[in-house]
Image (cartoon, rainbow, N blue to C red):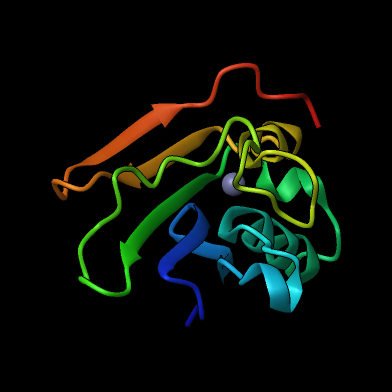
Length: 124
Ligand SMILES: [Zn+2]
């Protein structure tokens, strides 16, 4: 469980198997690591650093506001850091492309889920 006002979680799946998962971290505690980056780190750790394992995987993201229990505006992984700094220093979508994850799935505040193909997935 995240200690943040927004509880954001990310799970990476491939062929029905969970490869990695994490929640967002508060900036003060651990540098504000985004859930997506944490989940990628977790997946790489679990598979002994073999990036190929993540190629073609899907990352599923959802965030709720702790105070209301409602979904946030959008849980789509960030494209640019802006004010949403994280200790990894790169936007989640850049990291997602780097490791070859090919689909993102995320929820919006209406509770609708979207699946997008990741463009410009980098060859691993
Ligand atoms: Zn992010």
